[in-house]
Image 1 (cartoon, rainbow, N blue to C red):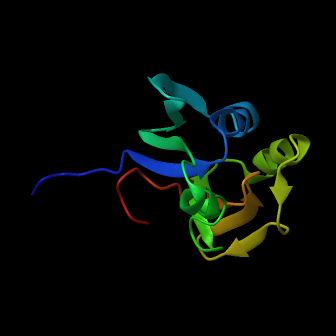
Image 2 (tube, rainbow, N blue to C red):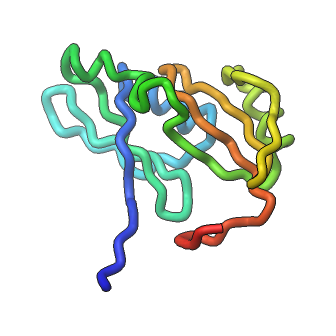
Amino acid sequence: MIAHSLAMVTIVVPDYDAGLAFFVGTLGFDLAEDTDLGAGKRWVVVSIGEGANLLLARAADETQAAAIGRQAGGRVGFFLHTSDLAASEAALRARGVTIEAPVRRESYGAVLVFRDPFGNRWDLIEALVPLEMGKAA
């Protein structure tokens, strides 16, 4: 069987620099690439770690602009794991990130929902049992 892995997911943003300010400046993700493609377009990739990347794509028309912050239809669309939810929550609050509700406990661990400045909802999860990459719990 051929092995596959998801390498990148696109997040539509109103402006490249606004996306970088949040994902790199606020969340601390790494800038992996920022290449000028001409005509105001850029290839902007931020790395979350362990092969997970976000492509920050500036909305190019009204249809794409309408999707900003609603890429998952109002549901949580993005999931991050943390080894220390309390410390991560404190850091997010200190950086002014919008937290939607207090931490809740689920069967798989503790969860905090936050929003990026564009409106996308994210789950920040401290799993009860650390997950190995590529393996289900």
